Length: 150
Image (cartoon, rainbow, N blue to C red):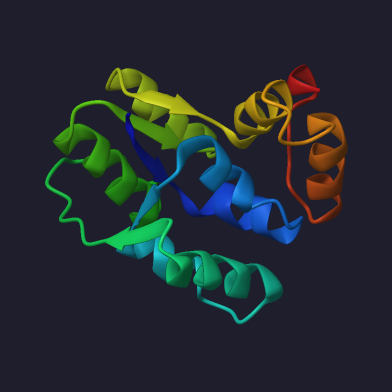
């Protein structure tokens, strides 16, 4: 099984609509770099508390990452650490939504997917009834998605 590494955006988006457990159901264990952890915990909100509970439950793991590669300066620290993890390990699946981070992952030939693909997989496996409905709920929280994915 691949090491699954998540960026903050997908974690926050799924937690906001109370669907974070989809990641556990699909992948078992999900890893996040310390910078991603800090980003998700920057404010005390229901979604940050949901993410903290997942860490306490043990299926969401926080790890320390030293960034050695020179990633574009436009990337956040969490995105850089997630990309570094994928560069350091074999058989990694990144969960990223940020367009610049995805572009860098593609340039580095890394395996990645976004939240929409995660929801599509969950729907295919019968974990949720409608990916579209969850995406619409996420949009209500300000999640931006290109019309080409709807």
